[in-house]
Length: 403
Image (cartoon, rainbow, N blue to C red; front, side, top):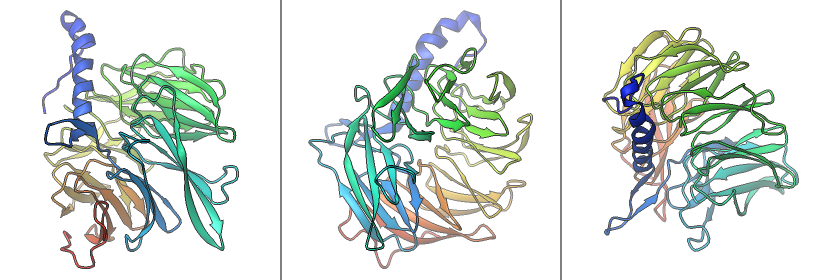
């Protein structure tokens, strides 16, 4: 993949500022939308990812609903179907989060953010020893601009990024706005928190650190990259790791906002967030490579080129790195050296983040499917079940397993 950004050439500085950002936004919008009608109109479809609560997977789907599935069988446990008139353009691009300390929710509340600019809350109540989910009406965030990034929790506040360029903090008990922080472009990242500081990126090319108490800027100034940031930051040992659309992966001091290290050998954009086993940073790129980097200096330990874009974030199961790519394949490799690759060919577009629970992973595809797949200790992948969200009988008893 060729680079579409310009760096360090003053003769083309004006192009970088005016054209590159525009191109990045157009490309990203194409990734977020797809044609849904014969006349070619586009609408958001989502990149659904979920959260595990007990024995169930809670996930927003491509069919404009939120549902709970058994992690063991994929069977439908609960579903809330939205009214298109009241909740048009609903689509989920990030994972929800669970808050177990919420008021009047007994078992916890799950927060979903949607492209239609609303927050949806699923409250989990205990009725006769059974968890009973109920969904509260959608709360419009700010002026209702699209929400791509996911929510985060810190202290007694719920954090929500918005395409209006603001990060919002809402009081969890009263659900009133505590504060807002304004950037100069859309915020599509999911914020992360460390102690009382919140870290997030923006399409304005900056990584921000703000105080959770009042939303004031924590660093002397934001950390500037040379292109948009959409991936979720990773925090390891007081270092913030983030990839940018400038093709550079950065390590930034969490306290000062100063650069500590960078990896510049990739020639593609970073969309999914990085993960770590504590010593090595693993991150996928839209150029089709998965990179394993030393956490201290971001030197390359190994990389694997699968020749297809890696959009979603990987997970670690056993001593294996598990990741998906846009050619419809799941792969596992050794954490230590990237060798011993095993794969499962699903033949669907895979762009959402993986979710793991023990030795199982869960992923959604563009065929309206959610799949539960077992990862063996040797890295072999075994498809346990598939759940089709657009079928009346969503879990076929007999299906051709891809692996």
